[in-house]
Image (cartoon, rainbow, N blue to C red; front, side, top):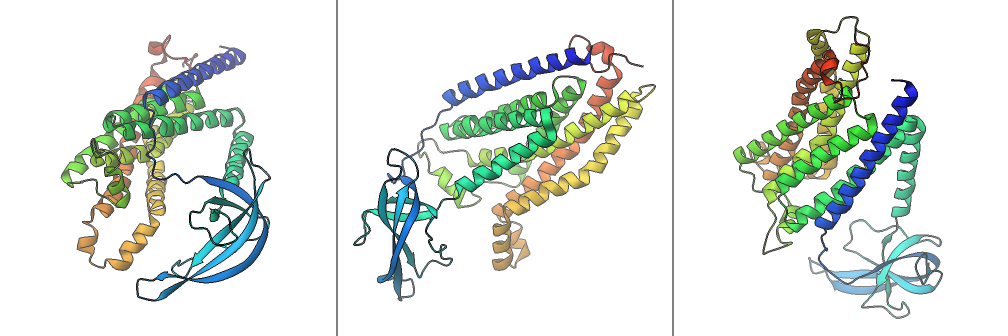
Length: 400
């Protein structure tokens, strides 16, 4: 197959995968649509500060130790930055009390902040009060920089990577999370979304050939192993799902059909391990493909050994990456546990710690299982290209 025909075929394939991802997301989002609970009627607006008045000190409520708490009220003028009232100015107030351990940054003219209607407005401040500084616009620039560099460095594959990332984010936030809140079976939805992410992401990034098929199958094998181990450990460790206050709040979202918190813990473990397992499976499949392409006489045994060598070299850094990612995401919890719980027997039997350790170890075990699975599948496919003609778009059209 000529290079031009191969590129056209890859382009058509990626277009078909994108169309499938779009249809899957739209239908899945409609099926799993969830309406959030109305916890309050407060509406937030973005405004830009145009003028700041003097601060006023007022005596507030009595603190926990019986002391009188002082409130500092700073009145400021600001203009709406969007919506039908864009440009219209309002008067608002910022309250700071002595009980706040870390005070918000002082307001400055030109700052963009969030405000909401204030039921207990002070004199001269209308009905608006300061909520927080607006930060989302800086996040948008950071995301834009990331996407630009991905395309700049990766070029065509970088663009495919962005589409894969968008399809993954859409599946998680438009289908997976709403499906859990709607009461769908968490084990089924986690498995379905994991397979969808693996297949769509790898097809978008690498098109369809024996290398991609090897990575997909090895990835599914690693994730399945991680899921099975997570389920077993949840049973052996008697995990209840009451890990922290976030899980407690989830339990009370719907009192008639409460969420299965054990399944939520299991889903978090599997989804958390998915990315790292996908990475190592693709690395092994790609490296073995290059070895096969330059091997005068392809041998299953030699290819399998090469794949295992690549996997062993990657295991150390990949497991480190996974464990460090989990520690980094829960660093505040680790610090608090270390500061207030000196009894190690108690500490390592707390469900919060047990779940975190299980998540990191099970994810690493999933990587370990993915290595031989991917190496075996790749060695089999790369040494038997003729058996897969018509099923795969073979890159090994001239086998030795």
